[in-house]
Each structure stands twice: as structure tokens, then as C-alpha cells.
Amino acid sequence: MYREVIVQLSTNIVKRGDAQLVSQINTQIWEMKGMKQFCALLLVLLSFGISHVQANDTRLKQAYENHQSDVQVRGAGTVYRVLPDDNKGSRHQKFILRLDSGQTLLVAHNIDLAPRVQGLAKGDRVEFYGEYEWNKKGGVMHWTHKDPRNHHTHGWLKHNGKVYE
View (cartoon, helix red, strand yellow):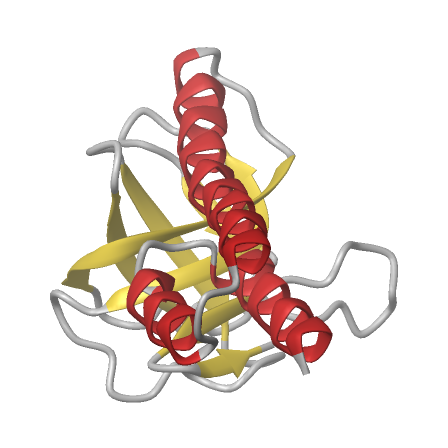
């Protein structure tokens, strides 16, 4: 039983990588009744998950400061602004995220290749995996979908527990 819980929690930490897992983890720890070793292992896993998000914020900040592009990265941010769709050429759903570091990031999500993120609103939390491209306003996140030709790493967006790819 404990092994399955550890596997599930570590999977969630890697997928979500955010502090929101704290309440889920605390609940499951206290239901386990006195498992000191289990608690220690869980704290290590939690530390890994939180540092993972901070590391990616740092990576995006460095990419911005060094004018780098083509950086495959995973992260999360809060919707700062929802923009009108870009309907020229391939259609893209566009919105701006504010990362935990304070940096802003434009997300250009190709809605010809992936479903539109439904119900997106200012203040919502969105996780992403895609390719960062530098610009002077903070950068753009592209490739947040599967590549139909399999030439590029598949990306995704996650909003309210649903993955869009």
C-alpha cells in the first residue's frame, strides 16, 4: 500500500511540481499513522517537486536575460491577461502568464493542432511544457501541443486538472 502511495505522489509531484500538493500529501501522511520513514521519504519527494518548479522559473529567467531561444522547458504561471486569438495562418489561442519569479510569458497555443483551453480566465493557474522563444517582453511559449510529424518534442498545457495537447 505504501509503495503505491509513494509512486502516485511522486508522479503527481513530477507532473504538477507545485506547492498545491502540500495539502494532499499532509492528508495522506496523517492517515498513515506513525510512519516516520515514510514521512521522511515524502518530504524528500516534496522538496524535489517544489525545487523543480523554482529551477524552471530560474531557467526561463536565464533564457530571457541571455536572449536564448529554442529552450524546451516546463513550468507554471498565473494568467495575467487573456488575449484575442491569432487567426492569421495557423490559429493560436494567446494569453499572458505571470511566472512565480514575476516574469511574464506569452503563450501561443496552436488550436489547429490541439484543443482550446476552455474557461481560461485571469487569475487561473496554468502549467505548461513547450519551447521558449526570447522576445523583449518576456518571451513566448510555443509547441504546447503534439507534433503531428513527430519531429519536435510534444508539449502540453494543463488547466483545472485537464491536459491540452
